[in-house]
Length: 165
Image (cartoon, rainbow, N blue to C red; front, side, top):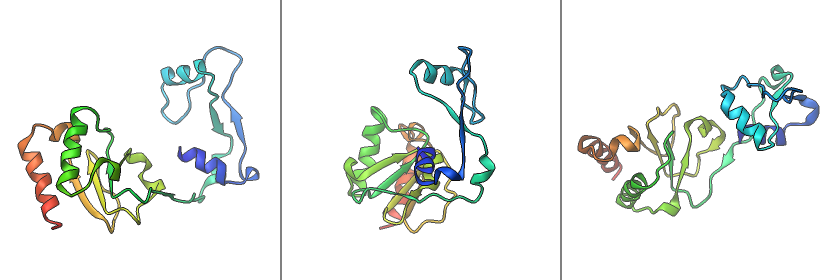
């Protein structure tokens, strides 16, 4: 997603790209830790892979931050997206701070630097470190799957929430 914004917002004369397509049926593995299996899946779906031919030309380039929806009051930054039982637990935590699911968004930690956090009220880091100094109320916890069913982790999270009252 970040590369998409980078490609859209940068002038085409700024860099050139080359296709990873080869004449063999074997897909080329990119340096972005893409596994051979993932590369093969992309090829089977007809999705082209691209590498920058001159990545050094992007040094110092900064793309615009992606704004969050004005409805977003809590941003969950976690490698784990809440689903099923974890979504129910996540919703209970949201209710404790007088929010509902429509006011929360999930974000993978690696995408956080690309997002504008100026309008968000809460940022919850679950299973990852908070590397940013934020104006928002910040929660730090283990992964949601580690909190679910663990009374000590739930108590620690509750104490952090209560500290903002």
